[in-house]
Amino acid sequence: MLTRRALLAAGAVTAGVLGMPQLLSRGVADAYVPTRRTVQPTAPFLRPMPVAPVLEPVSTRDGTDVYRIPIRNTSAEILQGIQTPLLGFAGQFAGPTIRARTGRPTQLTVTNEIDVPVNVHLHGGRTPADSDGHPMDVILPGKSRLYTYPNQQQGTTLWYHDHNMDTEAEHVYRGLAGAYIIEDPCEEYLGLPRGDYDVPIMLRDIQFDANGDLVVFDDVRKRTTILANGVSRPYFPVAARKYRFRLINTANDRTFQLSLSAGQLTQIGTDGGLLPAPVQVRTLELSSAERADVVIDFSRFPVGTKIELSDPVAGTILRFDVTRRVLFDFSRVPDKLRELPPMPRATVERDVNLSFDFSQLPSGGPVLGEINGKPYDDNRIDFTIKRGTTEIWTITSTDPPGVRHTFHMHLVQFRVLDRNGKPPLQSDAGLKDTVYLTAGETVRVQATFVPYTGRYLYHCHFLEHAMDGMMAQMNIVP
Ligand code: C2O
Ligand code: CU
Ligand code: CU
Image (tube, rainbow, N blue to C red; front, side, top):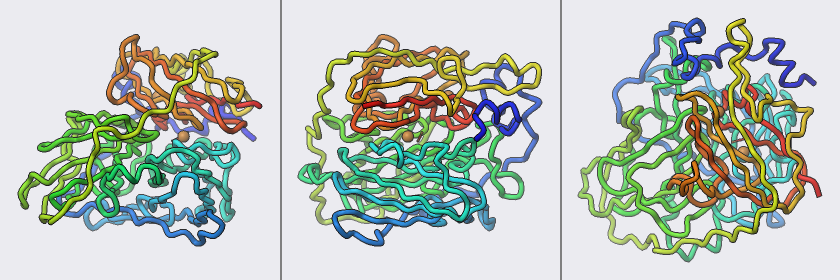
């Protein structure tokens, strides 16, 4: 098997990943930016936002939900009148939603019906190592693999996506992502909006060429078309009542600053589950792979009101159209949601530095993404961790201004202790598996490494950075 370094040396990684803002701003990458006309979809608010269908289990015997998903080539009409080739779980863009339940295992058999290797990782899942979608545990074309997700964790919004060595960024960009919701019986009494009023929204960006084909690796700033559940600037008809929206940022490299043109975003949960109490947020920061669970109450708006969800860079992303009144809305957002689990005392401290190595660039070599000065090597274990240990990791970004990272750990949900020595931000609150860092920032996180042993990844979740090598492995040992 080729190591990451060998692949880099062999030039197997496209130069396209170099088209990143930090390089452009350094004036070194202009040569790599192809001049392509970027096609924009036509007018906004022409189409309703679809809600991905909930996948039906093929069996629910013995307390286990059994699912099958083929990975297929597919296409979707994102630009009017043009079918854009994409990849899809079950041939759908975005993939079907899986609704699991705390304590009830999911068995997912994925069949690879495309002609390159793929695999599946349940992001944010507390998953045994052999089902975690390690980049080298691939599903070859024509083959299947069984993933077991015990769902021994509290209710939250996860997502599943491809994690194949070297092609993860491209595969996720082409569509291999879907929502995975864990419903928690012990949260039902809270009375939060449910059923049709509990809606996952996957947000991402995308770039098209003049023919309507995807531009996969260019300059991430040219991914100016924003999709909500696969549709550019859709409207979403709502009743005048409360809705729970599970926002998932599935973009390869983008941080949204979301706000509403009217009404309130009430955040109730983060990556790993509910917050102790709801928080009103004016601007919701959501970086790649992060999730935010929010409630929006439309009840005080008359029918006909249109409310936009937007971002200062991307513009309007989605419009909520209040189209009908309801007689009753029995849902509520209680003042107290769910206490965070207690944090055991940490006994180990580690430093994790995220950086790019630009030194080979002048001679035409690759830009390496590195963690603690080393690009990913499948044959190297970076941290060995005794199972059950509670650790504090100090994560730093030492890259020049303009370079941002989003740090993700597999297996665990962590807590952000502080950011640059100051209290964490609202976007750091609660149980997290992914945390955003701008240049020069330092974030301390604490995690307890349970319950499984084996190899797990930690990496930057700007997926092109991870593909450049900004990824490492921890081995949890008994
Ligand atoms: Cu969202 Cu290593 O993954
Ligand atoms: Cu993950
Ligand atoms: Cu990064």
